[in-house]
Image: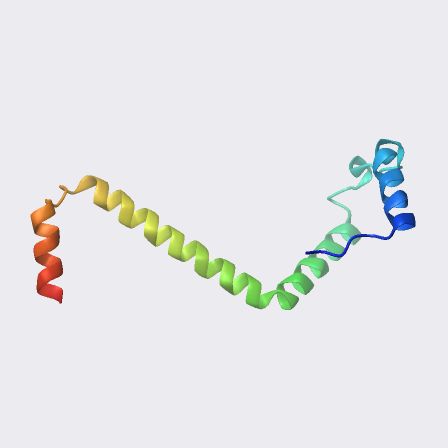
Length: 96
């Protein structure tokens, strides 16, 4: 279980949450995606994220490939005839 904030800290968090709509929020429309500096910073940030999260990305890609294979198998199974109960138990008995 996560540690609970102390009394003063909890009060600060509640106050912050209650005043959230009044906090200044940067306006995204002021960013020009065509700006060379912005594009350079974005590329650097993405490259750094890819370097630092290599294991996570590898696992994510493996999950995506597994899911795609499962989806393909399900679709293929929907197009084929269903096996009878007897066929299933017969195949299980032969495998054992």
